[in-house]
Length: 187
Image (cartoon, rainbow, N blue to C red; front, side, top):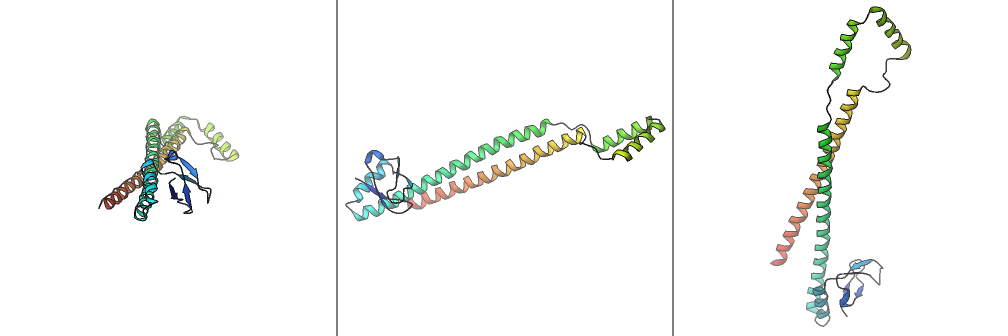
């Protein structure tokens, strides 16, 4: 029956060959442990009789566990980059779909034009109401709401772009280090 060291506590875990590739609990620390593939298990079983083969089998097991972790991290980075790219594309489409037709300068010009057309008595009443009730507007004008929403989508898109960039760089670094370690092992 082949056995291998637990990556958490180094306790020997004995398994049947039929358990190759599955997950078992370590009898020492009760942590879940991935059982090596069938080829690695057979090497470990052969290593039980030859100490030199046993050292090679343990190194192979460590490297296969490291490779599995790197592959999982690489896949996770790809998934995060893909999600960030999709979210960024959505934010960009929302940003481009919002059309702000007016600006503060346009609004002020409109008000000035309308004040020139209003009789003086009505202007006096409006100014008296402003003094009485306050000059603050209860909610922003519609064009300001549109400007704020558009800037919110731009900010969200920038964050998605940053996440996409970081995940891509992380994935590339993992790929480069993995290919370097493979090249080093082949020599």
